[in-house]
Image (cartoon, rainbow, N blue to C red):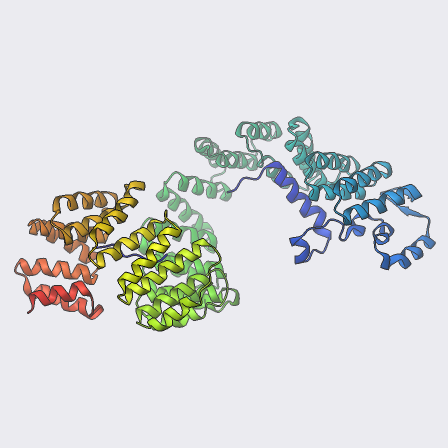
Amino acid sequence: MYSKQFVKLKNFNSKALIMSLLLGLILSGCAINSEQAQSPDPHKNSGADSGISSVSDAAHPSTKKNIANKEKLSSQVKVGQPAQELTPQLLYDLMLAEIALQRKDYTLAFDKYYQAARQTKDSRLAKKATRVTLFSKDDAQTFKAVKLWSELQPENIDVQQIYASSLISQKQDDQALLSLHKVINLSDTFEQGFKRAFSIIETVEEHERANNLFVLLTENDKNKPIVMLYRAKLAFKFVDYPATEKHLKRLLAIKPGYLDALLLKVELLKKQKRDLQAIQILEKVLDKLPENTTLRLELARLLVKNKQFEQGLKQVERLAKKELAPEVLFAISLLAIEMDQLDEARQYLERLHQHRLYASESAYFIAQLEAGRKNYSEAEDWFKRVRNGKYTFEAYLGLVMVYSQQKKFDQAFKLLEHSTANNDKQSTEILQIKAEVYALAKDYTKAYEIYTQAVNLAPDNHDILYGRAMLAEKFGRIDLLEKDLHTILAVNPKDNQALNALGYTLADRTTRYQEALQYIERALAINPEDVATLDSMGWVLYKMGNHSEALKYLQRAYDKDPDPEIAAHYGEILWVAGQTRKAKVIWDKALKVDPEHRVLVGTRTRYLK
């Protein structure tokens, strides 16, 4: 039989870290609305940053009265720690910097702020100069400004962290180490400071350089557990799994219950495809931390991934008894679907639906679940509840399909007429769905025409080629089917779906049995448990006269999935083998599931005339 078809850690460099640190530190005192976030402009709120209110106000005519009042109060302002006379030249330069900011002349703005900071020794002006470079994206200016800022505020841990990162981006590792040591020494605890320092070393993209920085920074503290842990983390970042394992082994020998080390060990084992050992570690950790939802969810995922469904279900049930965050509810509902616990999955999704922010997302998955169970009317209702969010377009496609499955073709076509696509991918999917609807309406010529439009739009999309091939089979154009399937196999010779479809078609619609057998054998070698391919193998063996072997494959396929087409094939071989009563029972049972199935009805009619 044919396979069932459905329409279907980034590393940061030093420069990126400098920008994020600057944003966090410099903009933390500024109220930024969504418009500012979309189009950042450093002159906004600039007066508060500079510490010289009259300069900011002078850039705006509506505030001239305030300037006059302030100037009456004093001809001096405090700039930095000492009182600094606001000379005409200094006032002019700062006003010019503000105007340059408004005009987005960042080079001039930086120059004026930087020179003013040097003259006044005011760290706030150095901060302002640094902020300007955030928008000009000039690395040399950033380094220059941060260097001055760090000299003016040597005891400010945030500034030293930014300076260390800037030094690393300039490849000045020796100086960077001095600043990293300052970051550690200025922190409340060694652990806190070390984590800050490591976040900077971690941005280095060269493995050897990052490792050297780490070793030099920690040479007097290399036996501290936190240092040993982060040495392992650095090795893990660079995919040096033997070194990661070596460092973790040494650490866990000293501190066996170190939770962070155990969790890194779990991640390492997963990368090494040693899931069973990862499961054992998680189970031990959960003995000590039974209420840790995150770890229990990870354990459930690993168990399900490794087909330990009963144990995975126990973990899911234990999680489900708790008051859970929406994202955890969503995760366990998907795990329940994976374990074929569909009623339980529906309950979790309904709980998730109570959370307003997840209402549309959960509605979409409930609709998908019910469509999979062929409860099309209920699926239709839930698809209509998806009003916004990331699944809106998918819900629209789903609604078209459930209309079609209920033979509400007028409503399906009406919905398709008003469809809009945001990109070529969506345009292709709409064409694919439209072709499927015409196929369900048995207008195969129109369906094939639309599939061809989709192929022309996305010639490398193998799902569309496969769909068109299956459509060609419906009106007897085996030549067209072979052409599309061979196109897929030329690119991916191990596409077991295409191999199986080609083999099954040749077995079912031609007498090229030996050729069909070869394709099916290749497909079965790739996926030995695929139900559709097991059925195909049984069918080609039956056609070749090997009834006893055919029966074995078809029984395996039927036991895995009593699909109507598998039931038709299995029943036919049973009938030929003389087990007519059993064949009739199997056919009648399948007819209750799908009373109009073409292959099943045709097979049953031939033998029960």
